[in-house]
Length: 511
Image (cartoon, rainbow, N blue to C red):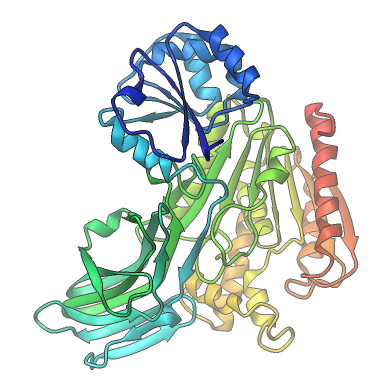
């Protein structure tokens, strides 16, 4: 019977003779220098690719050269101690985004892989509104929407509970999770995060307690799975005097050291613990690099993977997990610089320039496509349901479009520190000051907009009015409806613009 994961090992010694192979793995072992036998086995067993390929000695990667196009990105694992000047091997490692890992403890590596190769991925968050404050805390308490809850006062001389999350979190059998807490702290106080575990079906039978201090929280907390399902409760203990702000508690299926959300996925952080997720796929390693910014989504992870993969070219996915479902990819100078540095890193990785770059997104993802497009002046910017004036969206939410996008008030406060009209104007100006500095003479804009846009009703007209004087080429198509109407038609035009630009600028036919 076929098991969950097909694992290939190439090396001198078969690990199956020395280590316990997890039950969910089909184990395939081949000696070095036997590519013909490997090819025959793949044909007989109808195997197109493996979930993971383990190569202790990187020199043996040469055996995989005939099958390089069958190696999925990030599934080729080799020893972190391996070094070579062999250009063929280096090219394979680069084009397949191979991962250098620690081979010193093979059993631990196998155990980690057994829980990390699952399909899909999932993440969500516990909002500040789900935080309960301990009755004994007599300081000030302030809830700020989806942003944070602030506790200020005297927390006592010894660590004692001040807050806890109302809902427990399930850790399923063989499915570890990761936790990441957004927080800020001021004053002469300390806090720590406490996790208590109880078996599923139990009421109060805690079998384990883990305590994480502030130094431990610099990395995501990995809660390992057990032989059965269990729940965790999370609380905050503090001491001293000061102010503590507690934001979202993010919880995700863990892939251990092999990636965030998906194999090879990663996360950018700034000093305020704000996050932006990203994932790079090498495609066929030919231009362009297509960047896609996900729209507003309360669930965490990546959006548009198969849509972008079907284009055939290298692509880079971004998602914004902050607040309820994103904060428009704006943030501190540190965070914005890291987004730009990530895009530039993969341009360099591919040997490309900004003239080989396409920035794209839908809805909330249109804002960063335009905003960071001003920094890169790319070959093309392709957007569906464009939004440019975040402050205006919040302003309209008071009287003109109440209830259309209430999270805009949280975003306004998160980005400016206030919710007044001046803050709204400042946030709008933040976009236009950047956008109007750019030279778009060599850039094509594909704008798929809604004719009855109710979130940022002037965005399309303002963009076209400005771009008409820059020399930019504009492709546009309007769809009847409001912002959240007829997404299928809007996305169809978004993809149509993609195919036009891929064919005209990069000589790529429709995939």
